[in-house]
Length: 390
Image 1: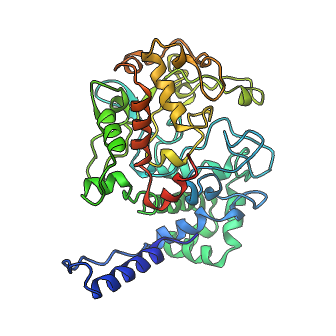
Image 2 (image 1 turned 135 degrees about the vertical axis):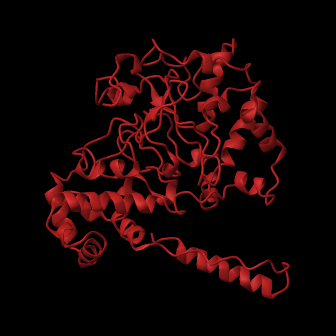
């Protein structure tokens, strides 16, 4: 898949034809969008290059597929709950998070209220996009390269990469593995900061710009989502945009234990419970076991399965999972995907009950409305995928 500049050019050309036909009143001429920088173009090539994995079968885009919300939809022996490695055998421990809007995740640290927030990966162990980008190529369960020297050797196989390295980072990057590794991280991070990953063009965004009218069901869901009386969604999934941020990313990037049940399929592969934030070297505290970073809800309707362990397949199931904490109904204590009661939390001792118990129980109409609103957070290019989610 190429960089979306060609797509934008085609769109602008179509608009010009419509304007020429007099169907839309001429608008003030806007500045032409800037083309990709050399560093971003280098990063794009690296992002899609399978030669940067040991067996040359896997790229960044394999687990963060741009055609599927930058998540990993590949079928495997665990139904895409986690990703399959370059060796065709290794499975990760956690569901691959979407790379959509990842550029807006703040660095890992402590907020003024004392709560930890930010960082890349489910446990925040990477402080920046650059640090995150350097992980998968050298991870034995992912792209599997044995070391940075092998990465440099793979780069030198490609004359275009040689030119990029020399022009952007100097001739030393052609011989020094640390410099080459840093170049790769910086280039991929630069690409991930482009509009390709964060277009802010969902139906919700178009609604805010007056370009889309919410359906009654979507409008009800939006009201419920942002309400401080009827749901608990906004407590963790609303963040005022920071300087330079175009819109809401629907996460405050804090860490919580929401009582996600263990994934018994994954447990059969790895018996060790996932410690979450406690595995982050910057935390390392036992009391942080089971806490995971609040994810963005952008493209959530097209990036199943859900939760850090991929335990839920359907978005409505996720809403019902939250609703169980506020409902006394016996029906609401049943996981619709299994037909039995919701599984016990993998880490039951430090649940975020203040957040989970906020708000009344919801009826089916309101649950469906919330799901309808969450579907409006889908980037425009993924809207055709929504028909596959019903």
